[in-house]
Length: 384
Ligand SMILES: [Mg+2]
Image 1 (cartoon, rainbow, N blue to C red):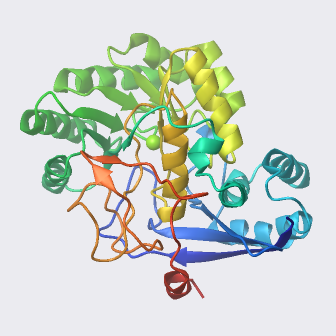
Image 2: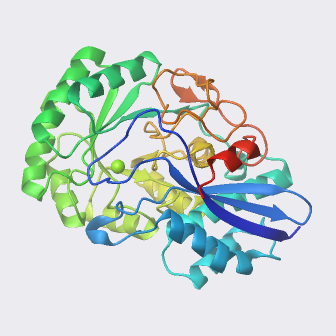
């Protein structure tokens, strides 16, 4: 089996409501599709969700856009991949690293499509290629975007009513607001819900961030994600914090994870397939975390069904990934299983909704990504 064609193009999904976080100035809901065909008729799908204004500490990672990802895949990666065995995934990823430095979103989209093909070629869902499931379901953490306090409280209460047991609250712009909202959610929802505040680096210098984390802990927060910027400040906050600190912007790949580990820069790691360039790189981060008893989540930029399915397979297969996953629950229009939880888009490119039980996504058991892509929808949502 050989790769016959590789194509990438942007598409957009209609959002349920506006979603924002600190530093995000573009609309969520833009993606790049990667579609890889083999000479025996199999089709693999991958996806990237690059955000031009989100990246690593001190501007050290990313800067990719829908246009750069589509261009790289079509103009640089496609010619190099055509004729190769799509199931030789690690070799293909090494090839992409030799062609271009960085650009991990573009590489991740190709990596996901190759895993989809590998699964389809062998008749196995991706999580089985990764070693099999270590959990029965993937519990979802619903993200409450930066929004009016009253709306945020209502969004959290509604998501909990849908069954999720974990919320990721976006903050980092106004600490007083974050403390009030955390306390209000704790009061409304009680002790059984995990509340995680994501400051997206927003609490400034280490000392102000330490003070912020202590106030949030007093208000009932369980975990604080990325309170400050850079490894040194993260390590200071982690040492002083009464609650676990999660590294997101500070930790992209295995090299960042080694640095975080050596500096004690966080208690937990937030893994995106894209930050590590796909399943192989993200798996390295998850194994390093597991070896040090660090808990992880799988997270991202609210992917379409393609990236979400990839995240579900990853979380099923990695023991360290046991924090609520900040991912969508994907469903076509009119068929979403929840009112609010995991519901970021009003439509998606898969034919059947993902199955959910008690706020957790059930395994996708068909070969590859385990979802059927609605090609007519993809064509409709394709950007000019
Ligand atoms: Mg984050």
